[in-house]
Image 1 (cartoon, rainbow, N blue to C red):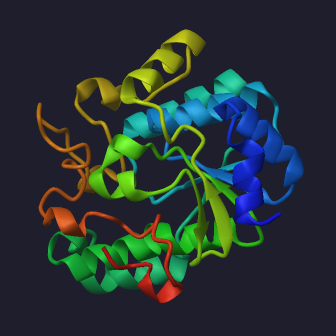
Image 2 (image 1 turned 30 degrees about the horizontal axis):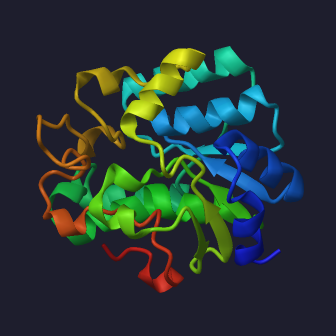
Amino acid sequence: MNIEEIKQAIKSLSPQEVLAYLAHKFEGEIIFSTSFGWEDQVISDMIFSQNLPIKVFTLETGRLFTETYYTWNRTLEKYGKEIHAFYPDKEKLEAMVTKKGPSSFYESVENRKECCGIRKVEPLNRALLGNKIWITGIRADQSANREDMDWVEWDEAHQLVKVHPIFNFSLDDVKAFVKEKNVPYNPLHDKGFPSIGCQPCTRAVQAGEDFRAGRWWWEEASKKECGLHETGSHEEVFKP
């Protein structure tokens, strides 16, 4: 199936139906990435509660919040399903920290992208290898540039189709689903953290601030993507 055929096949389906259709159409070639934010927890519930053959994974950067590990454990306890952990390359991580120290990402955008590249982008590339469908919890209203995305799109960098089943959910929709289904969620969301990444690089946001203002808050807004959702070539994956 090409991307247009996929769009036509799932255009009138609910998020749960989209996941079920793709899981069986691309069994063994479909994967979901979770960072344990509440959007991702909604998707995890849809996958696990339907017992769908979709591999669920997370990027274990080594710098996650304690609350994120708590949510990870609660998810395992509730659903009893595997969540695969992908770690940074040991030698690359050791070399960076040995040369630049544990907090080099604060010193320059280049250093921060190097850290994201080692801790997140390279493990992501390994996780996605060999798959045809990448499921994400991205929503359209999370940031301005994501409003220009389509809910089904071609990822040139990874040579696969990305599908965002809850792309049109509002934050209220997400919260309502979590409450109705009693889905475990990260307690940092109740403390002003709408977007949760690595602990040293994430802070709470104030009322009226942008959704992603708490991510890499010391940088200009235009530089605040880490490269995980770039859709260009591999050479462009570290660009903002």
